[in-house]
Amino acid sequence: MSPLCRAALVAFALILVAPQAHAADGIAWSKDLTVAFAQAKEQQKILMICVNAKFVRGSEIEEPAAKGLREVVYRDARVVEKSSEFVCALLTRSSRSDEYGELRLLGIEGDLVSPQHIFVHPDGESILVRKQYWSHGKGDAAVSALLAMMAEAQGKLGGEGAAGQAAAVPEAPTDDRRPGWIRDRIREVLEGPRRPRDLAIDSLVRNDKESDCLTPLLALLEEHGKDHVLQADIIRGLGRDKLEVAALPVAGFLSDKEEGLRGISAVSLEYIGSRDKKVVAALLKAAGREKDEAIANHMYRALGRCGVEDSKARSVLLKKCGSAKSEFASYGPTIGLAYFEGDAKAARGVEKVLKKIGVPGSRRGGGQNTVKRAVLCWTLASIGDKKSAAFMRDELLSKLENVKAFWVAGLRSFYKTVARKCDGDESAMGGIEQGVRAALGFAKGGDLGRYGAETRGLIDAYRKDRPASGFTPKGEFLLGGDG
Image 1 (cartoon, rainbow, N blue to C red):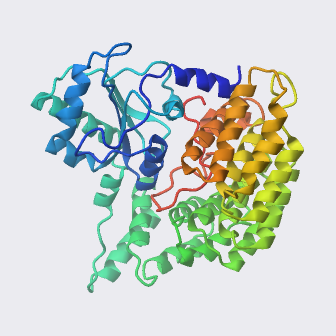
Image 2 (image 1 turned 180 degrees about the vertical axis):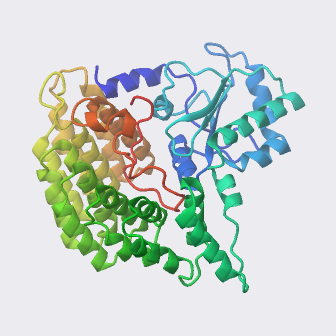
């Protein structure tokens, strides 16, 4: 059975699916679980998922434990105050079944017990705490129990969340003590172990004023050219949205002999998003020469964000997207094109590649181009050109009309969702991304085998452990668990 069909069957078994923003006053519930995962990652906060069905399954009998949580515990001032340190989502009995895919990726299968509380790591890849059922009633004992769960999750995170990070990164002094404060942070970068070093780099970046913190930090990259670990940590820390002063220095490492520095630099440039022509030129040159497919993918993704106004960048991405030697090597250029939102030429180019590979050609659906086909459709939806809706219906959906195979229903639904997004329905994007994750799960052991569960599909060591940057890259398709 194909991943799309299997995901659909699992989703139909779900009782409790999507968050309802109005379900309980006080806590600021996220309106959409997919959005909640993105918010948690961007804000570096733990995601608290509260599963809460109003009625017992198969009846109209109201569930008392769930009611007590909704009407009393979740509204308690102590809980509401503490909830501000989390991204919160409330899952109820009725809503879109595709939302369940987010939990399935965390290894949660089958019927979902209610009530229960799930605390997810900010990166969206693992569960910190999961407590099923509720035996604490709705009084002070219940409030204390929920607060204890929240504290347990924060304790397991180890101070890496937004609250812990903010406490460890105080504001730098603005008086004559400031130069000494900067020197102390530079010394911590040079001498400290990994965690203190990362915090010192974060402090310098966050407290920079007119480059007084960044100038000495950037100087370390040249002064300690043989310390590749130090360089990698600094370059990773510089990957912040619109941190233009770091763009060219980071771009200088795209041709470094150390492949780790090349990979980390490419991802940092995607986070920075510089439109500097010199940066775009460096990415074009480096990507064309890169021999490692994974690193080249990161370079092409960075080229997509940095070169979104550059016609040559678009042309190179389209060419590579269609001519890559392996399916895996096409993912970076394809994801890079997703940054060309509203670009009709990019849309027509992606359509051309999609038309060439066509729909699956056998009863089994065929393993070849499974992920490439899904990522191309996702990219087309991300670009969002209205003409692409007609393309999906006329060139792809129509080709499935006479195909008789178990995977057709799932693929047809996916194509229709892509067409809806191209028509302007923004709510369709979550379902499209879930379809890509299903395809990635299918590809594990094939072309993605060497990048499987350990690296969560396309999320490898170069993309992990990124500091909060105010930016979420496109194409962060986390598989979670075993995919």
